[in-house]
Length: 154
Image (cartoon, rainbow, N blue to C red):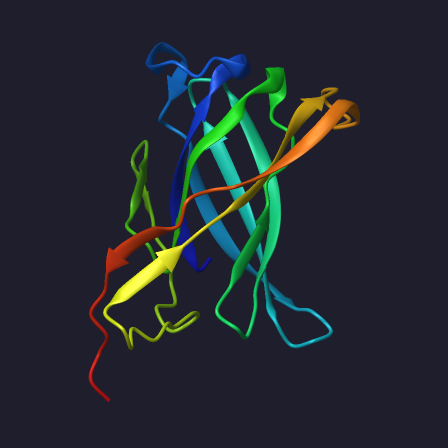
């Protein structure tokens, strides 16, 4: 286990605060390497509110990109927030504490004092659970999010 994460989802296409579920927690696992030597990851996410868990796959490219495929969510729900952290903060689950084990698994360089994240989403109607499109899809590029970072001295 290499990290943890959190997410927020809007239930059933309702983009209103009353439909926002903020309890999904994620655990990130090492899944080996692909043919190009990029690290593969598996992410298990679970929400107590919806009582649903999903398995996602992704990879960390040598160019510093984390690419994760988020599957179709039940009841036409949508992802509002998706945050991965390696090793990440501990997650409390009942009497257990879950935490990432290897802080050196993924390293970034903070050469310009800011970390920029962005995302591309494919939006459209899908049949559940197959994920088969039932209408047209639209690609949407999220606005980049910038945060300050402080790199370690070499």
